[in-house]
Length: 512
Ligand code: HEM
Image (cartoon, rainbow, N blue to C red; front, top):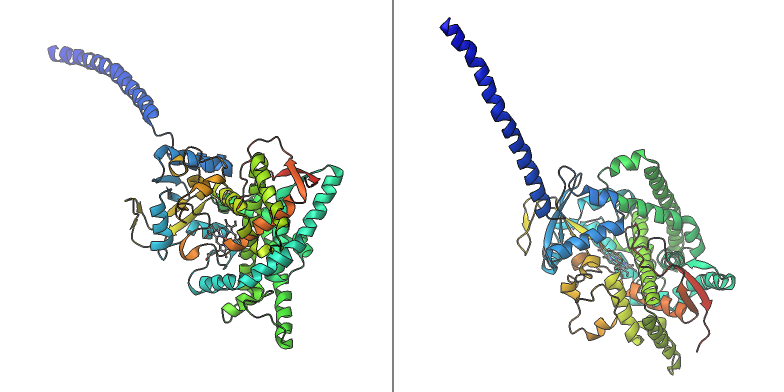
């Protein structure tokens, strides 16, 4: 009995003890977790990734302008000249650097190891194909040689003095009509078509109107769609199974179809010229990009020419038309610089001999600084990335390690806005800073035209086109803001288009 009684009493005592411990233990655990969560939240780096989704909330929900601002905010937060990491599910870890030494390392010192990013190639190969932007080795070299041969001094002079002025007439007709009717015009669209027709005529010998009608719209749609894929972990699914993905695919197909047809006509024309002995020689005006491609490589396929020409048009059109648009925007927001630029243009007419367009920029020292400042704040390629193709990790000059297959990103747009690099007025449009500067920034301190073996081959052409176009327009017309005057931001695209374009009001100018 005693035994039974003792056992019978033992059970309830044990249970009571357990409950006594469990309640305070539970409170301690929950309270401790909450305290830890609050402390972690308060001491957390505001740019830290979220569990599982990493930084997807930044890229998935923000516009391009929004995530570029995030890159800038974080670069300011960690300090200029630093390298930091972010995480995007589907793309893995990526390094972002504003350190010029690291940029030099990946673009020049280790250029053989850091190639065009795998991500870049994957998301854009249905548009860029085997073209210069994605090609490597001899395919890349041949195309680079062809572009260089195409932008010879003779070709530049021909574009400046003959092709561009002729194509500008189309813009003047649009401006005249808008001035007459008091209509607001999208300046960005007019200039994009101008660069399309000018580059198309010079590089492919195509009728300007044909090119504008056939590809201007699908071209923009395709590039906008591709640019969104860069930050969309589900882009493969979206490209195949969503209405927007189908629209982009249709736009790419339209552009490709047109280019196949146009190139086959050009090749037939080239064969005729060869037979008749009327072919244009290299370094001569009229030496087309298609001919330069044929001369650059034996047995180049028609499909390679098609890919290469499509990409050349992105390089030659969008970059420059964006730069011209942002330059006018900056001048409209800073009327004193606009007045100074116009008076410099007007002063050319008092020179004893007219200045040829091909030599224009050397006579416009102030406008030269306007162009530099505009390209600094609004670079046509605001964000760029290269991929580590080495099988071993690579150590950057600042000690950071790039793992195989990891991307390194850099952004002239971000670097130009860092006060440590450009002073407290870094984000202001101030062309004089280029007059005051003792040393011009290196290509790594401001990689607007990239650097190293893959640097831009068209920068002289681009600057000349910027100067001629804006001089011809601003000496004929007065432009006024056709928007509320608020800051405008970049839109979606591979280059740097303006969100919503640039609405302007136009009047014919009466010279003072
Ligand atoms: C303001 C205008 C321009 C800017 C800011 C600019 C900038 C750049 C940048 C940043 C790159 C490197 C792209 C990359 O590898 O991801 C590049 C490459 C290139 N650019 Fe330009 N560009 C401009 C105008 C032009 C023009 C007018 C041409 C016409 C011929 C051109 C031809 C090229 C070519 C062919 C490449 C590829 C070079 C290679 O991979 O070897 N660019 N440009």
